[in-house]
Image 1 (cartoon, one colour):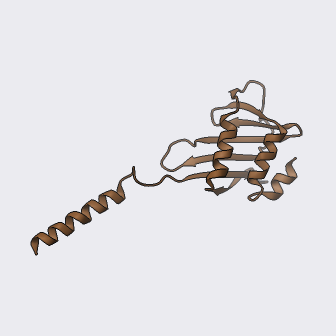
Image 2 (image 1 turned 90 degrees about the horizontal axis):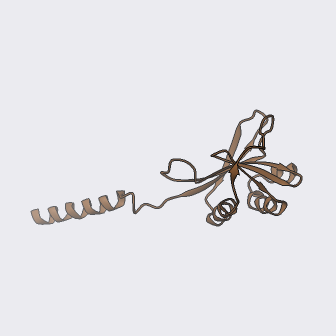
Image 3 (image 1 turned 45 degrees about the vertical axis):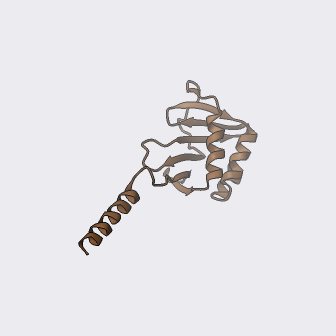
Length: 141
């Protein structure tokens, strides 16, 4: 009887330690889409749809980022903000502030680097985000 209790306790301990192990837990990646309101506070919605996250992350990773020397955000309100965050990581994997204009968009990342988006790339972003902020996306350009 004593051996059975020790065996059950040992098995319970092993199962408990395996369940609590950080390396076996799944990481959840979220895409946050933010829209500034009239009070200049950015309100976010989010999704965990892997395909949307991968498409947006790939789009911005393939862009050539350079130190911002010409684009000024003074007096401008961003049209939307994109942030890709992984659980238990410090900084976001991607954080981009986007300012739309008639020829595409200007984007600034978390490090103050700048890139431009053409109309086709803006259309792709619209398609990815239209379910979350349909009025914002259609009204901004």
